[in-house]
Amino acid sequence: MIFRKIQSIFCCLLIWILTGCYAHPLVQSELDSENKDGPAGLLLLLDGAVILAAVDPGYRRIFLTSATTTGELDLLGPGTPIENADAFCNVDSNNPAPLSTFKAMMHFGASSGRRGPCSTSNCSGGASEHVDWVMTPDTEYRRIDGTTIIGRTNLNAGIFPVDSTGLDAGFSATGTEYWSGMNSDWTFASLNCGLWLESTGYNGISGDPTVTFTDALAIGPTGCGSSLPLLCVEQ
Image (cartoon, rainbow, N blue to C red; front, side, top):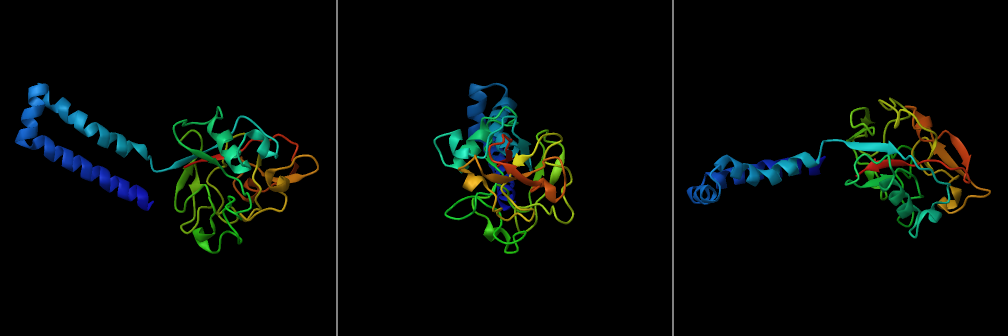
């Protein structure tokens, strides 16, 4: 949120500078000599500032992948399970913004740099517990349509209060269970497909993307040989 405020201030400052430059007699003379339509020159100058101002809409999107995968995520590509899961998100046909970066909302253990939101129930220690986490505190998240509000994360941690007030809307209007690897309080689930390296004989926790309370994170164990989608969060 602080970054976005700084970005807004920067954009306003840039517009002020460019407008001032345009008004300067030397700049005005140069623009008029190259383009009789002076206002068009100003629009060209302001174009970069307008683009910057439009970059951040003030929210992030979450989508459920169309493609599915077993819990053996190392088979998806040459990278680590985390890298493969993120790549899986970014190339999926449901991706609403191919030029944005999306990351998989999964718990990978949060040790040795592995991704995870909370080491204690509901991140009692705040955002300091996040490791490579995909959501930020006090941020609004919306569905793939960019209109339906899923909810706003807690002020002190990038998680939703699914165990109390719940989500405003499920992560997705429709869809099957997705791989989460989390307990209902955002901590690491012991059932995690062997840290997402195994399938046969292993189980992993999955969530229901259509509900608004704790089942959104953890509805129960699923055999790791099952093929489920991933939940992806815009960065």
